[in-house]
Image (cartoon, rainbow, N blue to C red; front, top):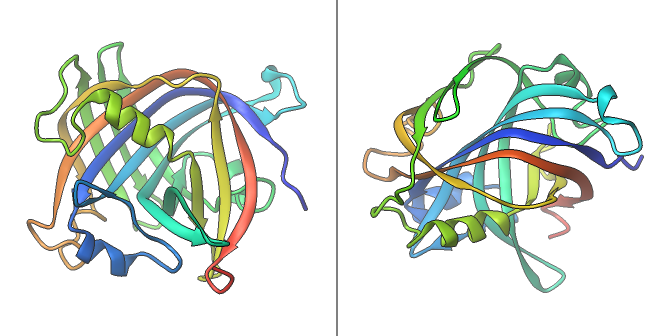
Length: 243
């Protein structure tokens, strides 16, 4: 069954990014994905996104729903039909919406785990914490809007980072079938990011030293998006056997 185009507003989206030793990252990715490198580093991260007025594109906005969501992502490349493609692999999605939890992967792309979010924000400051009901995922992010770009980032400028993440609009999510990945493309009416100065960040997944030994992963940069009209478009599933 073809899933409908979903339309809404990205009320707030935080992209927290880490640079990683690609030799350690590659074995953590399922086939056919491999790390997409920036100046010799792999990129992983957390997307914390609040969606508003989300609904099938044929419905009016007042019938849309809102939700807080989190995704653990990796920038990846893969080959398909002789062509190299780029995007993100999403190993896990969490949400505070029971609708997303129950209907994700069925009525729209992406399997979700239910979680509790605590969000405190103003125009300049943001703080988000999340804990999944199954206790598999917990994270927290606290930061302030800034006009300065981090001199230690693998990206030389905000413009370079913005272009990199804009080009990663195609995402493939893990499913209960290990060799099957659901495709979803984000299409924004316009693309704009601001640098976010991070004061504190925690992720039990990226801090798991059995996966990422000390020194193999470091915080790189963070970006903030607000009030972006957008659509989600289902894409054909990707299967490692076919790739």
